[in-house]
Length: 110
Image (cartoon, rainbow, N blue to C red):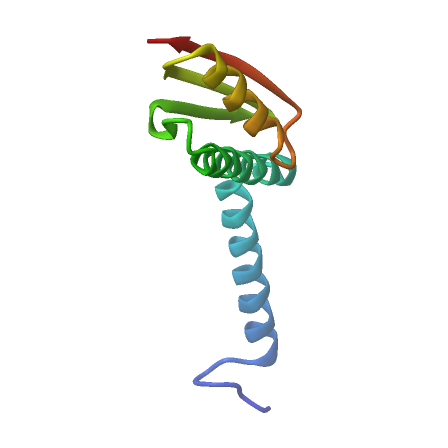
């Protein structure tokens, strides 16, 4: 009889490999969300980053005073700006980002 490793037969090696694969698949399945949820989170994070970059690109806005949250492509802007024009400019900048479905503009005037 041919042995694989120390004292292992082909059947034992195959069973061990199958058991290891099942355990790893089970761990990976428990450690992640449903695939579409994970993709959505990644998409929302990318949208948030894109909106923040668009806000930073507008020199008239104090982007560090504007909070951006995204949920399923809906962007919520909050914080304080100095004029009504800044409120409109921030919303317009957010709408230019790919993946934004709508903008909830909750910005307030100082």
